[in-house]
Image (cartoon, rainbow, N blue to C red):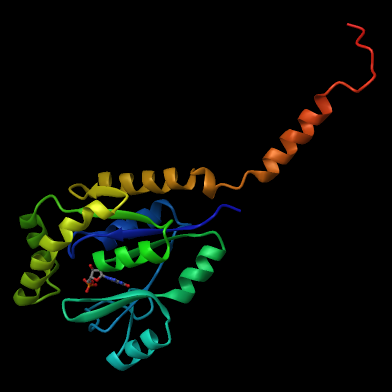
Length: 217
Ligand code: 5GP
């Protein structure tokens, strides 16, 4: 069985992480998605258990106390966390799991799971990020400003990542993400080729000349 890994897709709010992950999963449907918990309110159209597990502050605090998050972070006044059990089970079964987290979460995941693959999604510019957040229309002006201020700080964190993907064209960015997954799956420590090796050794053994046999050629 191939060894699974965490594909941590991170970067500033509005950069398109979520869309990138969903397009990637259309191309590579065996990639699982880790649904996060959050204390923020659902946006129109968001579904509990699909987009997020929407939790009260009390419930979130209980989960923190019970150590049920792989990581959690406060972002723009709300809390977001990655449920641990799903990650443990998915990795044990050899899956690739995509996560959409902000930069503090990515750093914490790296500390707890050093072999996680960290991808930073870079916006073409801060102005473009602003346009995207405004177009999305899910936040009030004040919240957009907060997210943009946070974005400027988050961009500094790119140096802690393994890969950077510029999201100026969705098609190219999804292609880059898919290439990362393919390459990471080919890493020697993630491949289990022991059966193949055993059969090659057995074949090589059969090719050895028998001891004592006189070579008549
Ligand atoms: P939004 O409110 O726009 O859905 O998400 C805000 C930010 O929280 C995004 O940058 C998103 O990547 C991040 N986020 C979502 N889920 C998690 C999580 O489980 N942990 C952390 N640390 N950040 C998350």
